[in-house]
Amino acid sequence: MTASEIALVSGADVAAAAALLDGVVRRTPLEHARALAERVGGPVWLKCENLQRTGSFKIRGAYTRLARLTPEERARGVVAASAGNHAQGVALAARMLGIRATVFMPETAPLPKVEATRGYGADTRLCGHSLTEAMTAALEHAERTGAVFIHPFDHPDVIAGQGTVGLELLEQCPDVATVVVGAGGGGLVSGIAAAVRGRRPDVRIVAVQAEGAAAFPGSLAAGRPVALDGMATMADGIAVGAPGELTLAHVRSLVDEVRTVSEEDLSRALLLCLERVKLVVEPAGAAAVAAVMADPDAFPPPVVAVVSGGNIDPVLLLKVVQHGMAAAGRYLRLRLHVPDRPGSLAALLTALADAGANVLEVGHERTATRLHLGEVEVFVVLETRGPEHAEEVLAALQRAGYAVTQE
Image 1 (cartoon, rainbow, N blue to C red):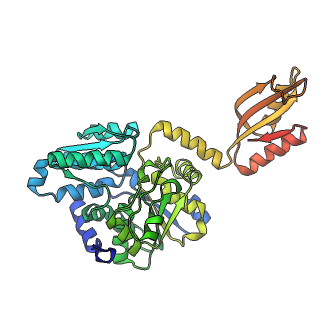
Image 2 (cartoon, one colour):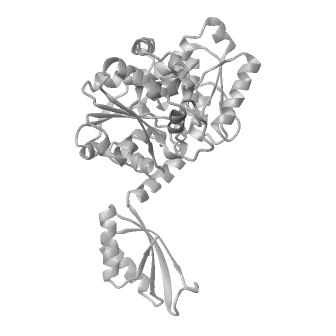
Image 3 (tube, rainbow, N blue to C red):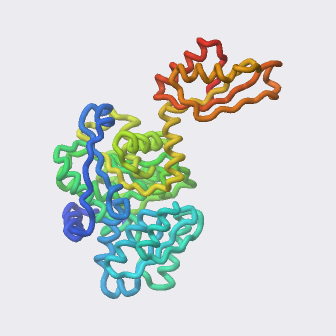
C-alpha cells in the first residue's frame, strides 16, 4: 500500500474514542505558563498530560486499543514493548479490562517505570539494551503464544485514543493558534493532528523531536520510514528509531512542521517547568516546551504545548536539573591562580561572597607543572542568579586582580 492509499484517522474516530474513554481517563488541566508567554508575546498554555493516570497520555491509546479487542483476542492476552510509559498504559488498561498482559522492557528502562508497570499487574520482563530489542522479544512472544501485540503508536485505535488530548485542548483553549507536541513514534501528534484538523484546520501543528533521536525528518524526505543508525538522548520516552507507516502518513498530511531540540534545550525546559510552572516533567514530556523556549518567535499565540509525561527517575531528575542550571548560565566553573600563603583562599572566598556567588565546590592544586613557584590553582563551582550575574562575578574577580579561566 502506498502512502496515498493509507487511511488516516479522522476527527470522528477520535470523537468515538473520547466517548469510550469517558470516565476512564482524566481530563487533564490546561495551565498558563507566564514565563513562556512573556517570550512568545501572547498566551502560552501547557496541556498537563503528566498529571494523567499512569503519568502520561499513553493510557488513552492503550485503553482504546484493548477495549476494542474481541472476546477471543482478550482470552489470548496481550503483549507490548516499551521503555516505560506505554508499558504502564497497557498494564493499567489490561487490569481494568481483565486481560492478561506481558510487557517487555529494555534493561535500561528507568526503575520507577519498571516498578510501576509491575505494580499495575503486568508480567514485566527486562530484555536487551534498547527498545528495538524489547520490541523483537515482544513480537516473538506474540508469535509463540498467540497474544495480541499492542503497538505503542502505529495503530488506528492507539492514534484515535491519543487524539482525545487534541479534543480536550480545543475545548479548553478555543482560540488556539499553534499546538506543539513532542514526537517519538508519532502516535500522539498524529492523533492530536487528526482531532484538531477536523475542527480547526487553520491551527498550526508542530511536532518536536530530540536531536539525538529524530527519525521523522529523514523518513519524510525519503517518503518511507527510515531507521536511525543510533540514538542518544535523555528523552527516552521519544527515543524511537523509526516512525510507523501510519504515523508517517499522518505527519506528512496533517502536521505543518517537525522541529528538533538539543539536550540543553530539554534541560532548560525541564528546569523551567519545575521552577516556574511547578510541574514535575520527564525530558520527553518537556520537548514541546523546549521548542517554544528555543525559538519563541516561531510559534504564533495562543500556543498550547503538550506536556506529555512526568515519569522521571529521581536520579535522572537531579542530573537534568544540574545540567539545566548549567545550560541556563546558573553554574560557573572557574580556575584561578592565587599566592600559596595563608589567607589567600579565604580572601578569594570573601570576594566571591561579596559578588553574591554561592560556592558549591572548591579544590586546589599545588604540584602541577603549569604553576609558578609559590602559586596554587583553585578550582571552584559557583551558583549564580543567571548569565548577567555570572558576568558580574567574573568582572568582580578580574577587578580584584585574579586571573580567571572559565571551564
